[in-house]
Structure formats: C-alpha cells, structure tokens
Image (cartoon, rainbow, N blue to C red; front, side, top):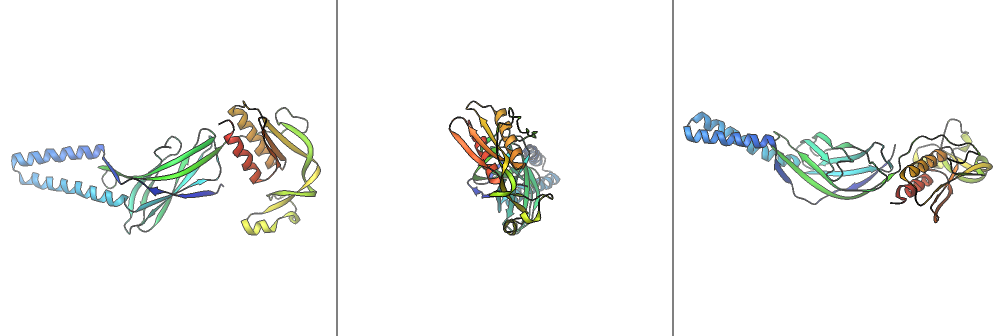
Amino acid sequence: MSHLSCNWLFRYERIGTNITRTGTYFTILTLLVGVAAVNTGNNLLYVVLSMMLSIMALSGFESLLNIKGLEPEIAVPDEIYARTPSYVAVKIRNTKPISSFVVRCLFPENSEHIEEAVAFMVPGNGEVVLRCRAIFPRRGRYRIEKLSLITTFPFGFTNRWRTFATDIEVLVYPHIHDVALMLMGDEEEAGEIEGARKEGVGGDFIGLREYTPRDKLSLIHWKAYSRTGKLYVKQFADREGTRVLIELGDNASDSDIEEAASLAVAHLKAGNLVALKLGTQKKIDYGTGDQHRRKILTELALFNL
C-alpha cells in the first residue's frame, strides 16, 4: 500500500450560499400562504405562515452552524499511476462541540479526476477521514488547488459551502501493465540486455529488496527491519547476471513510454539491474530497489511533456 503525503489546507473564501430548487419551491409556497392570510384574515393561515417562516429561519441558522468550524487536511498517495484507481484521503476535523451532519467533500477543479465523498456525521471536537476515489487519465503533473465542503443540512433549502485553497502537485506515473520478461537473447522488446551482474551470494553489495520465503535467513538486513518493521534482504553482485538497458527515442509515444515503464518495473521486481536512456542526452545508470524504480518512473512520467 502506498504511503500518504499530507498537506494542510487554508481557507481563502468566506462561507458561500445559494438556494436549492427545494428551497425555491418552499419560498414560493410561503409567499402564497402569506398573501392568502393577508387577503382572508384567516387566523389558521397566519399560524401556518408563522410555522413556515420559522422553518426557513431555523434552516438558515442550522446550515450556517453546520458548516462552521470544519477544517480539512488532504493526503495523496506517494505513487499514483495513470488509468489506475487510487484514493485521496481527506481528514475533516470539527473544532466546535456540536456535531455536523451530511457534509460533502469535493474538488471543484479536479472533479473529472477525483470523485466526491460524503461524511454523514462529523462528531463535535472529533474528526472523520474520507476516501475520494481518483483516476488520472494521463501521466504527468496535476495540481489540486481547491477543496470544498458543502452541506444542505437540515432541510435541503440551501447549499452552504466553504472553499479551501491548497498547493498540492501530484505526479502521475505511466500506466503499468503485466509484461513477460524476455530471456537472454530475446532483445527486440526488452531493450538491450547485457551480460553483467545479477543478484548472487558474493561480490559487491548492490542494495536491498523485500524478503521472500525462498531467501536465506542469513541475508536478512536486521537494521532495516528495526527502522521500517519490514523484512529486507541484502543483494550482492554476481558476475554472470543481467543488466537491462531500456532506450526511448525523442519521438517516443505514450504507449512506448508505458511499455518502457512496465518493463522497468518487471525487471526491477525480478532483481535485475535496470538503466534508462531517454533520447540522446539523459541516462539513468544501472540500479535496483524502490528508490531507483521511482527515479525511473519519474523521468518517464515527465518525458516529452
């Protein structure tokens, strides 16, 4: 599971209000009852009019109180891939002692990428966490600049909202699909594969990777376990392994970039050393591990944009 990076949001607009269709109908009905009461002098109509006006006043006051005191915090995954569902987490903190009800969270400028979510109750002096489903169609950088909290509580007569500004930049990696790794000598699709080093039991230390049941217990890196709580094993170079060089020309298409990213991820997962050459100038040297994988994916995400 990807980790989340957090960013605080800051309010930059006052509370906004607009009337809903239900509120419009109720207002018109209230006016008609008022006209009828004045024209007929019927005491029962005056009682009904008073009740309707009280409901309108209560609705306005309660909706304003419902949206006040809410402070959101947003967190996005460290790794997001194009056309792959992920989730943006929004924590809503209620700073007032009274609970808030039916609060919608949406991203007005990214609504085509990030779906809205609803908190049916945010307890007084408490908090809730919402998961907004997100799908970004293409690789590259996206900006999340606004988040809105909206409520129609209690009667749905008005929309009350608060908009918060943020400065979050999301890097979306190329879409990753399953690929079949090429054997030695099958070089047309896998890029240039050279006889070199692979993971072995001797030679130079080349990094860490996650532990699998097939690994020897003697290779476990216990210091990494004490820091992260996860088991990693040490990787050493051997003389008869493979290096994989993936090359892309300056005119590479998005499908070429996705294929390169998928190959890089697959080879790194298999323990091979992977290098990336983009055009005629930029090259990432051979390496392995999660940090090297992210470096390759970052370059591919921004290539030719």
